[in-house]
Amino acid sequence: MILVKQVGVYVNILNCRLKKYLAEVFKKNNVNLTAEQYLVMDTLWNEGTLTQQAISFIIQKDKNSVTQFIDNLEKKGLVTRSVAKEDRRVNNIVVTGEGMALKDSTKQLAIDTMEKAIDGIGEQDLQTFVTVLKKICSNISDTDKTGDNLAL
Image (cartoon, rainbow, N blue to C red; front, side):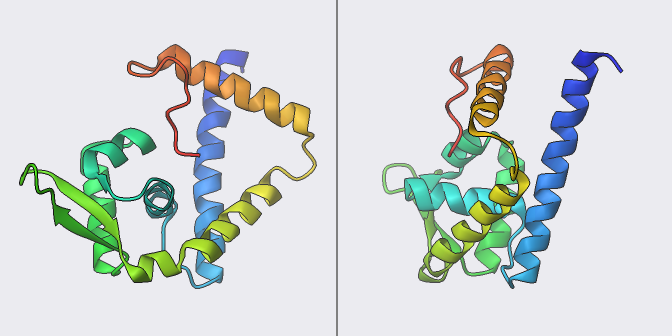
């Protein structure tokens, strides 16, 4: 397999395996979230109340997917939609008390999961890996040439 193809294949495999692994960890620890739902919640925990459009931009998912994630989070009682005072067409997404109660333990599970995933990989290798990923993102990004618009 040529190197360029390997990059695409392994980035895709890594993405799929990380989502699956995180879902397994969450299920084992009675956290009723998918990896994508966690990404939305983590973004809201970090940024506070946001519009659906802002969430979509930050997590780099299409608006329809974000709407579905929010619908499911709302059914679970973790977020609510609030109509923006300045524009009734805009929904602000607000984390509920129940959603905030998940923050610390769920974030720690995600951190522990990633620490296990990168176990045995040196800090310099990880820094290089992040630099390369940012460069790839920058090369293909239409809106942000730094690759730094992700919620971390």
